Image (spheres, rainbow, N blue to C red):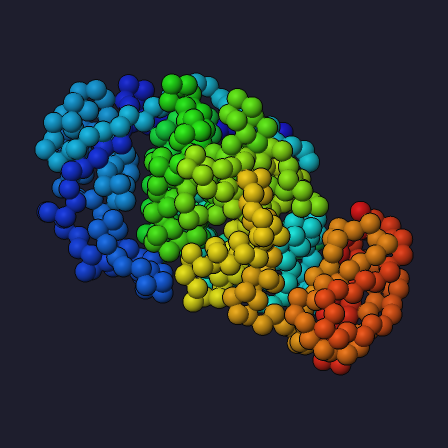
Length: 534
């Protein structure tokens, strides 16, 4: 099975694209920061108010007359970039000369653009807790998303913008039906082809989206399946050019303007179709076009979640992370396997200016995703592209649980909940975060209907022994436990007295591979947790 996609043919092959910078922004601007509702959504304004972030000149649109002046030369303004006080412009040589002579133009940067010829083919790989996660259970358990869901946090009220190369068949796949039925997709934008349709482009964004938004019980459930979404195509998968970095910035500004709380970007840049413009390690300093925009978005109160890149075993690149995962004050996400082990394709730090990267890690090896080449079903994919959206689901649910936290504290608490928090390094950063610990660090009381919470490990296990880790020490007396198979048959049961113990080991005996349920009963209530035996 293959997916085919084409470059839009409505732009002249003789034209080139430039990032045009303007020399001022305030004089003559019809917009004013005193009336932000004219250029920002109410949701975007409220996000700033909630975090005491002032609206300033960087939020202002560029001077409208400047855009008109460029259009008067016959050029096309593709996007304005308010944070950079510029615009992406498509024009021929004579138009560019006219633009350069305009009094309000400070300078211009060519965005090397290569027109794709013919068809590009991409071959995919073949491929009580009330929620039935199916095959996605291990990747969700790894971040304790099952506990997050059990306490009622599924991303409700949070707006997540996903920026990618396209969202093939998302409008038809059963894993996303709830998004359309509940009107949870608030908007879409194609910044590349500009044709208004993101559902006929590349498959990658649909697979990424499923790790956040899918709801297909028995197969796959995403971490924030009840959130709202805005889908933005910024990537032309047929080519690799700096124009895509500029589209990425435009997409981030769009996400800000519509009020996104979280942005997931499973995109990264290292080398280009024009080798002389390739990035080098020295560019991993947070100062490239996209990386500066990522940090700007963070300053506007958005949590930007970006994949660390898959260049970890690419000796020619050095194994480093990619742009913009080097940006300051964002969550760069690397990949681990099912046992939490670093996988060698995951991009490594440090940044060129010495910062630890990635920040956190999640399942990226053999991650379960929706199979968007059909209308139902799942498959597996590997890459930091899939660890990032699993992390974005945690970010949304955790922030929902603690809505008064500013974005920087959300990121800090999640990092401090990481499995490697005491010795962060440049392979896995602060490690695998966990909702329960982050919830406790934020002052939450992690309870269902009784005064304790547990974590099962190892999960998946070999089946001989299961360890319960008490996340909240408390004297609760006796528990009764049962282990059931997937058909409800009891395999073993017993009792334990709990008095501020941190761990309890249950001898489960040898079990066949499959999904099992541990049920715990106390006088205060019942808890159920699923676990996997390999």
